[in-house]
Image (cartoon, rainbow, N blue to C red; front, side):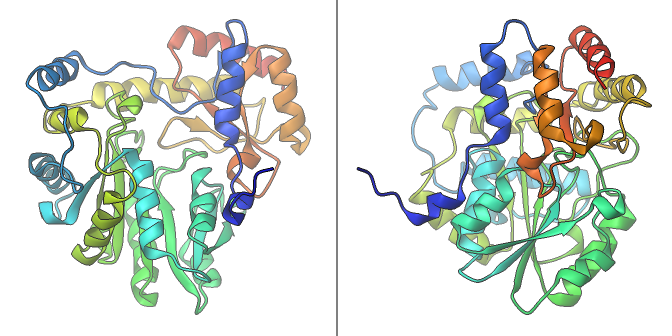
Length: 369
């Protein structure tokens, strides 16, 4: 009866969302599926949003974002990473997903190869397919889940257009040191690659400081968001920073897709980026990380996460789907690794869970290992 566009043949329902929806049907599950913080929006930001609503900030904004919001992002990035950012090089997006989508649609053409380290965030290959490019997966299982310069070099061809570089990484929790970022950037400069740097977890680093990719490579599209850091994933507010010609095209495309980012959250960005969230994002979540590692060590094989809020253990017997089903039988919701990988051997745990539930759920998970 209905004929769908062929591009939809390559887009599947998110495995993460499928598990999240499943969790909602279970009675009091231990839900380790969805990657969203367990803390609420800070009260001062709620108050700022209420003031914005009452002051009438409820209309369309410019497609590039409010000037004050772009200025706030530029100032924040300069203060945090020390490289100069002009507001004209910033676009305010509908979450980081909006930035990722706009970047792919503006930069990737039919036949272009886009390099994606595997494991990866579930969205990446679908965006490449929608833009009619070709995803090329770089197996990082062989390097303990880290992209190396040598691995990157081996996958670059004359058709390579762009590298997607996630730091810290969803789903593994792996993060890159400053020297590692600089080494990857050197290869990108050598081959004149575009780099799409997804740094949405840049405030969740536990063992060393986050190093942004953008200062080390001029052809970088840096994508970030307030979703994780400020407990506001439902507010859908993010940003992208890129060279002016790229930002100009992204603004044009935003006019005919998202139109603009939500107006009220834009009014809160300046206040949010001035807050010190480290007591929550670093100190509190380091404790959660340590608890997860200590509880599951010896029962599962995994790399200790250095950032984000995920563990990516190997499933017993190497069959993630079978293990996920066993976990569900015990009321535990985890995500099979194949939602963000070409392999089916691992599963993802989000430890962004209230502490009491985290302790109970991890103990139960260990018992079925």
